[in-house]
Length: 221
Image (tube, rainbow, N blue to C red; front, top):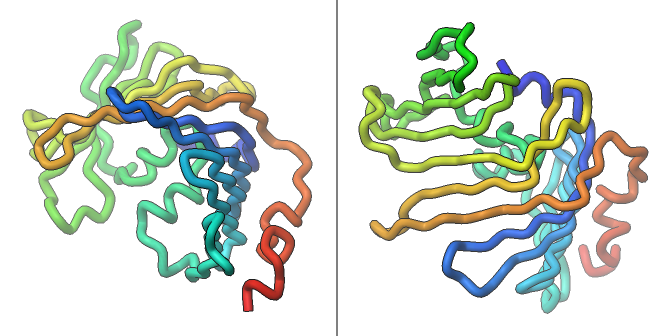
């Protein structure tokens, strides 16, 4: 599966900017991701916050907090785990939810046009009929994933798209922009995320993922 290519990325640093369509407020973060469930994220706006994940615990501290809040990593939700375990600026986090054994190619693989592959949702206890259509371009890059409430893919409930591709390693593409379209209380919502200053597979100091270094040791007690 295409997601296996992202295993070549052992760490990544970038600036992340998120904005909801029609909104005036943009959130800005600096993040450093590393395999093994490690993350150093500094939210700069609209509110300042620091998150450190060391593979065992997730520490969060807002600017006004006197001490950080700790949660065991294995107690976090599947979505929270995926956001730490998967490479930013890639479709890996969405692919993490799919059952790779269920893929059915819906187009001639020799076609120069984008292919579509249908997948079941991994461990979907809420509705076993949900499906995902993954669109792959002629280079083999995943460019879109559409989620549907039914097995016949007639009722779309969310769509993901990636553009501004950059080949950061041979055959490994990251994207400078992604968008998610869904609905909240029946109202369509589009979230656009930009990834700037992407850097991969750097020599990282272990202290980046050490909560004692990021937060005052006394404040943690």
